[in-house]
Image (cartoon, rainbow, N blue to C red; front, side, top):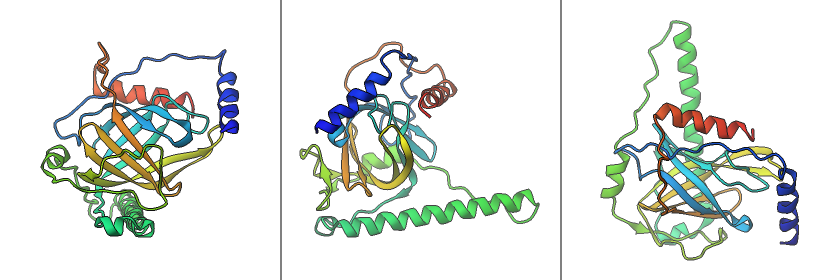
Length: 247
């Protein structure tokens, strides 16, 4: 813990005299969104609570850090959810087995890799004038589907750490996703597989497979005036700008 406090002190001291302020827009919402997008506070192990922004982008959802830490700074995309690859969790007894969850997630990861490879090969064939275009499945009405889903029992697998043991014991939907991890000072960043868990309209979670860690996110209930993006394009541009500050 002392080392972590020292790291945070060094990190913040480096940027005391070079602060940059940028306007942040709240993400636009759509009836088909899984849940209402917006700001959430999430648990990040020994780093404590951090503010993130959940937004939806067609086949994917993104969780962007609004506040950062010595490993992953603000502006970076901490979690990406693949809305085209839903994960069916096993029953509670089998879910307690981390190896079983790991098997399911890694199978989803391999499926995503194969589909991306097929799409790349399809684009190559199209550019050469041979073969039909690759079919792309459009995202469905996830928002309505989530409301109709009956909650199922949920428990963290044995060995997965959680800063807050008071997490929901039922969930509605789960999807394959990736989380961004890095060394101190945002060194050697990489995306690793995990599971996005939708608990309800105001809470979701993410299991970091490689870290054997769980983050719980709860909606920020504060109301902000004049914070809506003037257009979807303006919101996308804002995300690019805040990410470029720390890339």
